[in-house]
Image (cartoon, rainbow, N blue to C red):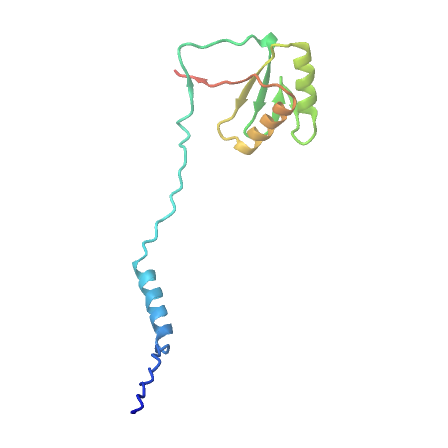
Length: 141
């Protein structure tokens, strides 16, 4: 009988010499075809502040505390200067709310005041459990 010799299969080798070239060409292709978008900065113009409507509800000054924040970031509660760092805002507002159970806090700020200061005062008011806050706006002339 004749012996049948099977052919041995050759292994197929993938050439890897050009792999780095292909990777750099793909990188170059994506860099060239990518569209870069400029970052847009959205600013609120200063003339777009809220104005009061015709139906203005007056707050009695006997039942309210007025918080002023000036352009120089000075905090005044009923015309007395206070500081955010110490707990004087919390102490004053707790004393006022214990005297007047229906206390409303009227909040006024300058239009150039940083929001960080407003937020800090609002956090102190929240710590003092004064939740009835009214933001006063300009009257439209």
